[in-house]
Length: 301
Image 1: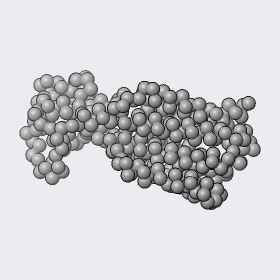
Image 2: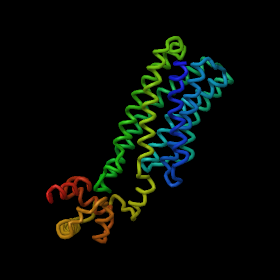
Image 3: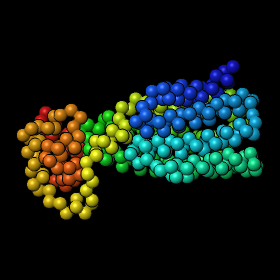
Image 4: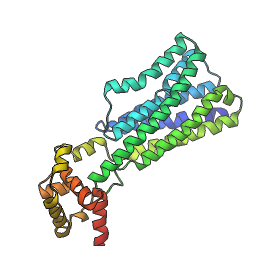
């Protein structure tokens, strides 16, 4: 009985959060929609786990488990791309997801043992790629956020980045478990409990953070929707007069006291665009828009 409860724990967590996301996710929030697909896949994955550890086994179930286990990391990476305003094309998503489908088919059509060895190698490669590319996207997006918003608490991805690292650290443990084989945990209940519990806790935290975020990529795209300036024009632009205007607006109108101030708001005051204003602050103040506004607030205080 205890074995059944612990083996079902991650599945119940994923299923509950999947249901919550499915009922409450906005159609206009592409990142949350992708997280919903991720949780649906995790639900099936851990259901397969629970069935296996309760002696329900078949080649078809092994194939389904393989498909899900090789899809969760690509889906989480696609979620990160949506979250950081770098959505992948349909073709790119297929490239990330098709290897798992191929290996799952090989289990049914070729050799289960050989296909499982391929799965272990592919799973390890996925973890490394998701960590490297995911962290790069999240770090770049945080820098972008700091150039657009004065108050970054609602918008930055630090919590997601920490969860990504925790997710991958836990997954490294999963790789070790994969090398040992599920049979190793099948013979020891305590090892099984220790292996499954961190995943359940991590998935709960990941889902909670994703659900409570009230900032969507679509909102960010709207906030930066002024026209784009090419890099050469940015480099050649004379910012001296614009910098004087920024300083005058800050000291005269004390615009830095506005709640949820954006660089676009400053640009509108100056009849300029956010790209020039942000570049001007970078050049003359030597910091991001967010840091510049916080300096003004500290001086005022």
